Image (tube, rainbow, N blue to C red; front, side):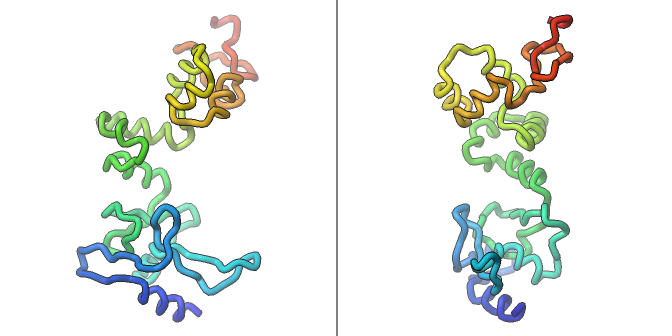
Length: 191
């Protein structure tokens, strides 16, 4: 079965020179990454594998853990040249995305950032869509929820949850205060 998978894999690779991108000619995910049937079934559906993962495995670089993703040095999702691929954690992939200014809807912000700000953005983006300052601004705002959602490029549900402290309850309303009670409000003795 593995030999069949490798054989099918090579049928869908447009191999070029060692430094060129090798485009995947088979099926792709919505994000443009190559995918191939692994030849097995999972819950009565055909299991698929990412072509980049197969490329790295064929090159002798097995996946270190389930958390690791294939990172492209060429920034082309359809490329399967193992010379352009490396395993990395999602946070490393995010850092790479920010430093190369290929962050999609965040591209404008990335273009204006220096490396220290980009590093901060990576740490923030790892767990939160909104910075602490954004959270304080949302809580203080009288704007409509839908307008804030559009401005911060997040869902209106997130804006509503931030306002009701169901999300980001750990962020105090005022800079410099650290005493936050169970529901995220600033304690009376520090206000």
